[in-house]
Each structure stands twice: as structure tokens, then as C-alpha cells.
Image (cartoon, rainbow, N blue to C red; front, side):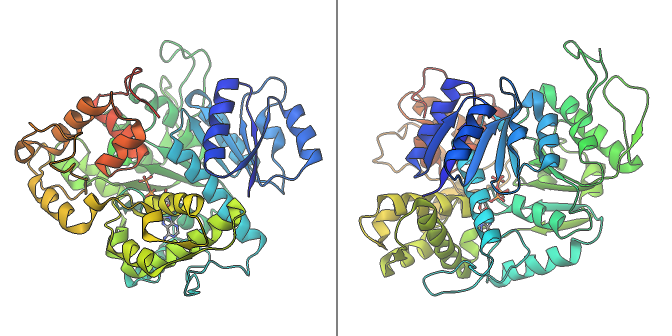
Length: 481
Ligand SMILES: Nc1ncnc2c1ncn2[C@@H]1O[C@H](COP(=O)(O)OP(=O)(O)OP(=O)(O)O)[C@@H](O)[C@H]1O
């Protein structure tokens, strides 16, 4: 079972994080300051430290060392310091408020990677002992033709400074691809700065990215550099670039055209040398047609386009990845090595995986925790019947986006006998956004965010992002979490 040390001075956040991680099989110790953390570290071994950046006394970065990976938590206001933390050797940072899935995904990813680095001979294997074919690619697995082609492309593209636009549904591995492109490039010794454009409030995004001078806007009490400058010499990964507001797009375009950055409120420009990698799960050409994304920026970004296939399209990889996840999950949770039964394997192959690899990770982990013995059965995976392929096909053909484009995204349709389905919803006439808004509004008081996300067949992170985008933030009174 992996041991995690949480270093956070705010009791509420600390205990919420403790509960989340304990529920997911981690063993937890807590500290409120760096000094307390050092004491615990001297007494017992840990696999991971999750530390707030700003703590009373020394900052969380004081805990960064060679042996134990450190995940830094930070608020948006101190994102730049988090970037500095990365430069000092933190393995990753996560912005508060974070989503549960996001935190678990970051923790699992760091632990899996660290474990692989410690024991490189232990490459992941499925029941059938299939070996990873993707060395040097951030632990990405894939034997399917489609993923082999992606790996070849990454290796070809990585050494050059070329901009890359990564496309693919949520959870298909876009961030892993971006990191692999950076790590296999001559820039690998400099940091890769990852920014989720959908998660930073619209009012802050320009100053976060481009920095600002003192007095540039109300509240700008000091001048600050932005994340683009922080990525100087390395790579800048702009995730969910489709959500970037138009003003920020114009500024980004200037950076790409001129190789220079001008902070908000400044008349001076500075040279920056970044490699830009962008990603989106949206159809960016549609955004261009709708006037939401600049065509000139699209052309600048899209020097090379890399499209990741969704998991359901790469059947060959489902069992391979599931097997690898099962093995690492059992190791992490300190459980005896488990195997999938035949029924579980058939169920894994039959399911449509709307949340892609991230969903597979979550379901395998839950199954390992809940299974009664070392054989994982189909029931342990709790795959919703309603999202099996045939029903999904019916629904997706009846949905349209707000500009009448066919929807390619898979959503679970609550069935007719499902009490949570508002019976009066004329599904055929609703756009995807309308459907989403109405379903959330009519059910959020009775359902937790996790239940809502499950019903909609999307991740909690995706639910959160769509709530922001569609202007329906979570109500304080809703049955949250
Ligand atoms: N081919 C793969 N092999 C092993 N693990 C993978 C693979 N692809 C994705 N994963 C894992 O799935 C999870 C989701 O991957 P990632 O965050 O890169 O997806 P994404 O497309 O960027 O998602 P989003 O658009 O929601 O940010 C991560 O924990 C990652 O380690």
C-alpha cells in the first residue's frame, strides 16, 4: 500500500484530501508545516509527498529531494511559483481547487512513473504478459496499429521545434503525448509548463499566461511574469486550447509570430523561446466556423496534427492497459496480484469507454478495492449497461450541437424507466448543450457530482469544465460529492 504524506496547513483541505486518498487505498500521514513533515520523514518511509506551496514557515518546495516525488498544490494566484517549484525538481503541480479525479489521476501517474523508474526491468504486463512496446514514451501503452502509429509519429516529431496540435477525446492520453514530445526533445532538461485553459478563470487567463506590469489592472500590485515566460527554453503545453478566450488568442498569436511576449500593461517586448504543444477534445474547425477560434492561430498551431484514437477504437489495447493498471494498482494498494476472469475480459472489450483510459483506470482501481478475491469478475468492474455500444449509437445519432452539427461525443441516455430522467425531455429536439444543462439542473439537487457525471457518461473533470463553460456552476446546496 502506498504511503502518502500530506503537508497542508489548512485543516479542512488536509482532511478532505486524507479522506479522498484513504478511500482510494492510500495510507496517509499529515503535517501542517515543513518542520513537522521532516520529523515524519525521518521516522518512516513515504512513496509520495503532496505539499501545499505556501505554508507557515518554510515553503513546500523545501521538501523537494531526489528520493521521494513531491506534488505541489497551489492556488491560481501562485501558479508561477508552482512553475518555479517544477524547476527546483517537484514532479508536478496541481492547482486548487482541484477535482477528485484530477488529484487521483496525478497521484497514480506519479507513483506509477516513479515505480517504473525504480525498477525498469518490471515493465507492465497484462494477464497474458504482454510487454509495453513504448519505452521512453511516458509509460504510454499500446499494441494497436493506431497507437503504434502514434508512437512512431511522436518519435519522429519530438526532436524538432515544430508546434503540435493534439486532438482526441478526454482521457485518451493527450497530456502524456505532450510530455513525451517534450521529454524526447532537446529541450527535455528545461521544464514543460502545462496549462489547462479551461480551468483558469477567463478574467485571469491573460495575466496568467502573459504576465503583467504593476498597475496593469485593479489588484496588480506588483509586476509578474507569466507562464509563457516561465516556459522559456522549454515547452508550453496548452491543454483545452479551444477554451482560450479570443483576446488571449490574439496575444498568443503575436507570441508565435514574433517570438516575443509583452506583459499586460507593458510597452516593452521580451524574446521568448518556447515550443508550443496544444491539445483539445473539441472539434477546432467547428470552433473556427463559429468564430470562437481564430483561423490564423489555428494554422499557426496546427503545423503537425496528432489525433489520438478513443479507447473503444483500439480493442487490442484495452486488455493490455487494463492488465498493466491491475498490476500496478494491486502493488500500490498492497493487495495480492489479481487477474481478470474471462467474463471481466469480455465485459472490458464490450464496453464503449466514453471516459477512455482515465475511466479504465478508475474502474480497475475500484474493482481491485471491492473484489472479494484475486479474480476480478465483470460485476466488480461495475460497467453501466446503458453505455454499452448499441444504446450509445441510438442516442448519439439523435443529438445535435447548438449549430446543428452531429455530436460525436458519447453520453449515457438515462433509460425510460430511469426515475432520474425527466420524462418530458423531448430528446430529439435538444442540442447537446441544452440537454446537458437541463439534465444537470433537474438532477443536481438529488445527485452528487459523481452520480451526475456517471449518468452523463463523462468524467467529473469534464462535468466541472462543462459547468464552467455553460454557466451552470455547482450549487452550494446540491448533493455535492
Ligand atoms: N496509452 C496509455 N497507456 C497507459 N496509460 C494511459 C494511456 N493513455 C492515457 N493513459 C492514462 O490515462 C489518464 C488520462 O490521460 P491524459 O490526462 O493524458 O488524457 P487527456 O487526453 O489529456 O485527458 P483530458 O483531455 O481530460 O485532460 C492518465 O492517468 C494517463 O496516465
